[in-house]
Length: 361
Image 1 (cartoon, one colour):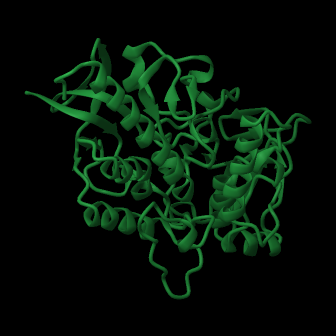
Image 2: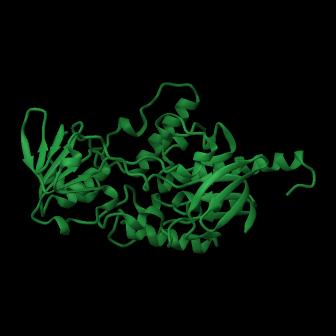
Image 3: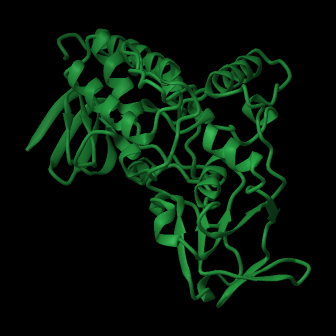
């Protein structure tokens, strides 16, 4: 069965819901296709102790503030999942799940969206699949030889399964710091980073990060000097668990290892450390395989964009993948602005298209 809408949104996490909110305000006919079986996007797969970088009031999607939990300044992942489910219901967003999008194809006047449960034809597509589904593992020599357990951030749940073990945590960003802090009390922890950890000042959280990202984008758009954005402030937000472990002297980072061996890791100076497990907190890549039929991928697997719009396909917008698709667009607070801009631009494009073709939908 083939169905027709103005816009197909691929992905029902925070970016997809923000897109739906603004598409409805533009009066467009749309559907949100989500591969997950339940609401909550990637948040429902996060580790137990994960904390947001900002208080609830500053971690909200457009139109509805995230409720505050008494005594909890920085919400956990479960709170975000509940909020996203409530948001979806409150606005009656047309989310279909589980629906996996297999490919987006150019059919001339329309884009054809092939899924595992049928075909959709749309006048525009918003891709909002995020990065969680494409974990990145660095090519460290010996990784295939290591005899212990290896897992990426996406598979980490909590310290209980590692209690008493020797664990190497790799990565100097927020995920690496939070997971290292989580493991610091019950394991023999070694935290390795490519450069010394750079903590933001303790009074800085996601609000300041959003402002910094926005200021950088504005400066670049106006041809002014690059402010450095978030990177100029540091790499790690000192949320309370990280701050406590750091201040207790439990978060001491070592340089990056040069290789893994069957029973441990090795540094450049030949020093070795035994290990039972390695947790790779080494980031993600954009999940864009469904857009491969359009032939738009460029360096580093990205699609060239102007704002959120794909340069090579004006009917395609990419939302929520990071600063290259809008300042702080991979955050709850940041995605609303870029979703609004994308919905407005799509409404304008479809309006112009309809005026060129009298009698068309």
